[in-house]
Length: 241
Image 1: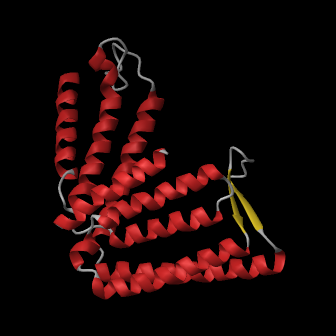
Image 2: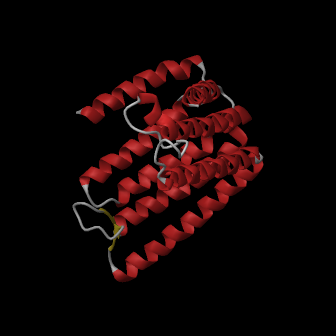
């Protein structure tokens, strides 16, 4: 049985890698799901592969079976099936609906930033410690008048950029997560404006840089790929320094 499971794990891993390396979003999602299922199956039987420890998946007669690991891994498999199905449904949604969702998200974020601006104007700087962990272990976000104005300006500009992108960005580039990249850049910029410590400033800079790497190569044209190498090298050297 262990040999059969080993072949099944290998088949799942090879199929997952083949699908993930394709350019189709649906294949990537299915491949990611297969990869997680293969990992779960490997954990179930890995004790038997090594020969030193009893496998989690045993016959229950010659080896003791602990039901807790089996229950946990089977639960993870069920959850991963559900998550894969959820992302498949999202992938089937039309790009028009994604555009509408993006604009709705931008409008709601602008209204939230405007409300924060009014609150800061009336009550002074606002501080939030995420997870209620005290500094320096927790992540502190601080909003004063300058940072809120910068955040609001960023959101308004991004709103018009996304609106302009409806007509200027072709369907091929939309398919490769153009709008997701824009939202991640906004996340990094706003986080950099409102962070309360240097370490998280660096983290948010890395978030916006990773999203910018995606956007600069979107489309896969020769000029883009050539210039993106220079852009990435400069940013990597700057990050190390």
